[in-house]
Image (cartoon, rainbow, N blue to C red; front, side, top):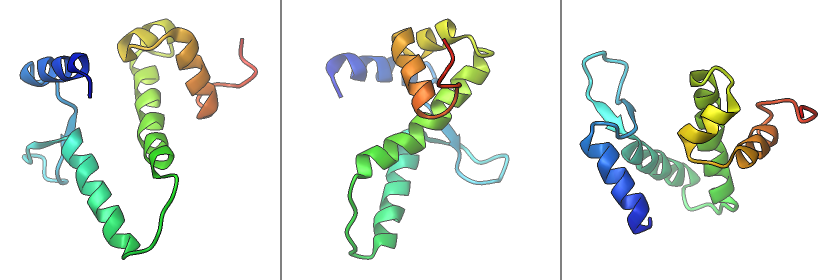
Length: 110
């Protein structure tokens, strides 16, 4: 994480904007930071490997995270790619490439 990323993350966290989701199905459960959820998931994944080998883990994890991230932001912005790119901090062309890659828009779309 770069100093700029760390500052951005710290600013979001101090403003109560750290990404999180409920720890359980209990409505009163405090949210779990996304960072902790990823760490927990990775521990569980390695436990299930039970000493077995894996490869291309980075691509697998990024696909698992990036697809719902992009879909959620597109829903939030009501399909407006310019707004979505701004929300994500991406160039609009990069966003379109990712949306096509994950099948979130028609690959023939202009």
